Image 1 (tube, rainbow, N blue to C red):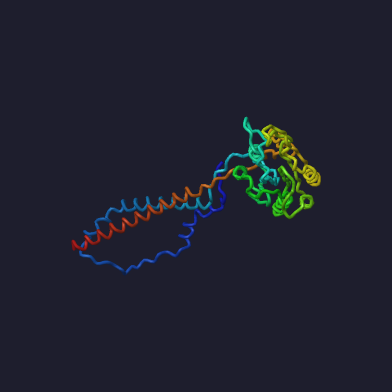
Image 2 (cartoon, rainbow, N blue to C red):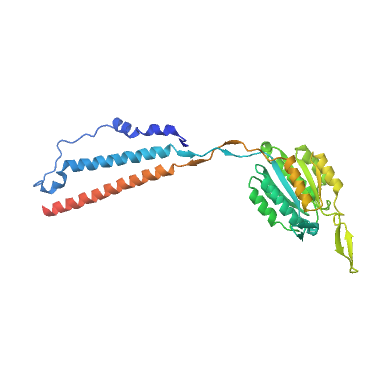
Length: 344
């Protein structure tokens, strides 16, 4: 559908006629004259019909140029078809543990054994891709907590920067309290624009660093309505080689503080999940999709493409064309005048 953003600008179309009507008439001088020995040098002006046709042709070109200029001022635009744009208004922060213990290779991805962070990237990346309509932010934490991506609708950027993260980037220890506090601060900075607020925190250990106690940080989250889902990641048993050359079973998740993670989730109205393998982690993110559903598409957005530059360019080209014609006519008249003077 075609439309004009400022249709009232079309009222300027008769403006040149109005200016001409209001301008005082040109007063001719009757006693002025040019004395020449003969009229032979002015033969170029004897064919009045040719001159009048030329002036008439230029007049209509000028009219078209002015009409195009006014049309450009009215800002023509093309309005596209109505699009379904889901916007949930939800602020969803992801906090991912990058401490040294995330290097434990107790997960499988496909047919190969991978570390916990690699499995997290694969599963969380799919989750991010499904969160259409949510503003997503990314916090990476270890001994310190960093805001890697502020809240944004650009899911591709969030996923890319998650994939670029590596173990030890934020230190070897785990600062769960600082990660929650940073999420609280970023959510709080949204002010009145903040809608539904969710933090998904994934870790494989206990709080061993940072300045803020995790439960104290959970209180701050509760005060601003930030709901926290915690995920404890790590297998319950793993077969490793012993120093005697044999094999033994160990618990690679012995340091996981499930009690604190459960309290954090309960205090903020969230839920604690336990991911013991890749399939379990995928199921957790599927449940999160159900508990925090993606917004339903809502019609109402129509893309608008402005087209004012086309009539503006046309008007400019016609104006340049008329200017060039006037220049050539002036040069032609000057050459003819010199030729007449020489002939005299």
